[in-house]
Image 1 (cartoon, rainbow, N blue to C red):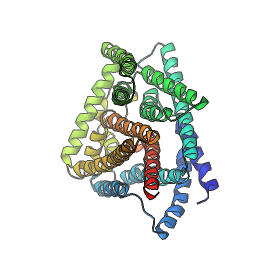
Image 2 (image 1 turned 30 degrees about the vertical axis):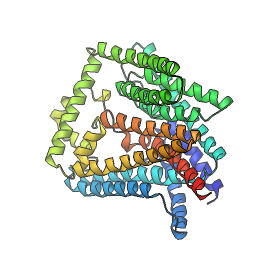
Image 3 (image 1 turned 90 degrees about the vertical axis):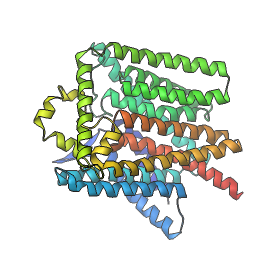
Image 4 (image 1 turned 180 degrees about the horizontal axis):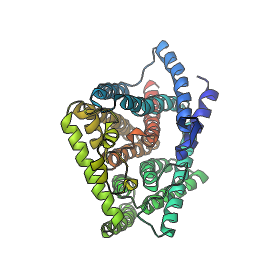
Length: 420
């Protein structure tokens, strides 16, 4: 597979990620530019995978099991459309989100990224590109947050047109990218290391200023995970001081949020979150096994005018389930949630197995990288399971793509060492 064909698409995907709201508008057609690039990668991947099949090359057994579990999830999601209030809209939703992003990011972009990262130098180059992408996202977060504070509206929503979206969504992206960057920086030297450090600090500042308790609480999970790792490897006192300082920083933010909980904007948001959760449970109770239909949560809200009145100010929240568990239970039932959870935890177990192997062999480079990937995957799980549903957007699949690249590169190193 010629790299000159793959690299331009992958580079564009990395640079467009901080601007996923940039769209191509032609008449009634409205397509995000990042999706167009991903679609191009999908066609290249088709050529590549046909060659792999022809040469009888396969993925690792664990990855095959994970992919199989997700295919089962897709089948359940497709069957669930029979329960939807608007089957035509649910079908469009199915093709647009769980299918398209899985194929183009997890399978296509992820596999092709692994294909062009066969050596350590090229692998590090893609790491640098990821760092640049996350740095741009952190700048967007800081700028939007400072502008809100300047307006005297710390808890409100300010969106920069054509960028990643509101500051809270951006902060969640940073929470997922942060552990990956921490894992990488330990393998970087010289001037790039300084840029990684600046990006990590920018991420922390962006998360703190986001006024998002989802980002704050998930950030705490990330720091606790890395605190455990630092205690294992480095000076206990220095590590404890660093983690304690970061916990205080985020603790102040959470306390500040709780103290402001009597503000009208916060009250409306919390009441809306509760009502959305109740609605998700009601949908699940009506179709507990295969759900009410993929995408039906948002569709069903449109049919209940009295329900929408309870939302207060819909602009403060999404018209979607606040939490992946609510989302999947209400739309794909117990079977869909089980299949998706299997897909996710198989990936986590695959990374852990790689991490354990490299820790035993003393490969510090792979060990740090894989710990960052594991921490990132856990952060992605926490923030989506309890606070949001970014699973249906590139903000979930792009970091997951990069996490899979880390695991595959480490796995290939292990295989090469075995053969030698």
